Length: 264
Image (cartoon, rainbow, N blue to C red; front, side):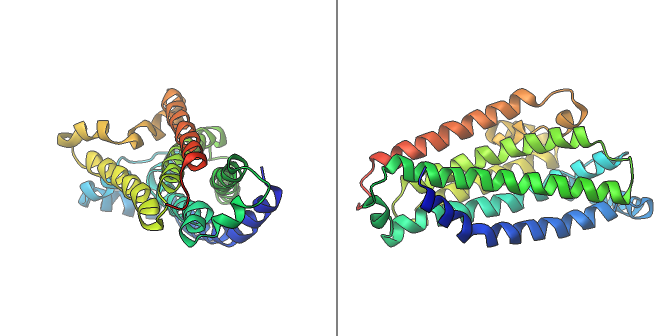
């Protein structure tokens, strides 16, 4: 770990974290207030009128509890997309922009090893995502308790949040490996971003109709089992697979960065 680089990376990306949290807080607050029975009936009517659209965004079914409502309308899509946007931007800022601009030469000229430099950036990338999800979980749960005392199952929502953290750890590893492989910023960010978006689109298509069930084998998002995690009936080993794959990609990205020709 490089302390000065760590401090600089954290300071320069606090604003991004704050923006993503603000957006999530806004959408989270809207979703929680929609738990009102009258609005719930309206949503159910809309879902019945446009089942394919709601299914594509992971909003199928009729939630019976506040916890089910949050998992259905918030954790199924919004909490996949917005932290992913932050992860993409962070990967670019922490690695790709340094290499593409040539500023990485100043880092490599320091007495710190490449391994220490890339490990520092990886830690910032990983922890930023975890902090984002942890703050949202705490804030959303507290708001739910204020609005609807005693109706939220904090433990069930925590399990889903941990599963979500594993999903984003996988996405983060993919993005981080991508920016470590390429020297040019466009492919460095583009390849990882394209793959993550493709995985999300495949998942959306798979949820629209039973005819597309075979698509579940083409995207790792299938391993994020919100319903099973919420009910406590499963989803744990799938989350472990996602986390393990994410760790391998972070490690592979770090090894590639340490061995590649930066000047190429």
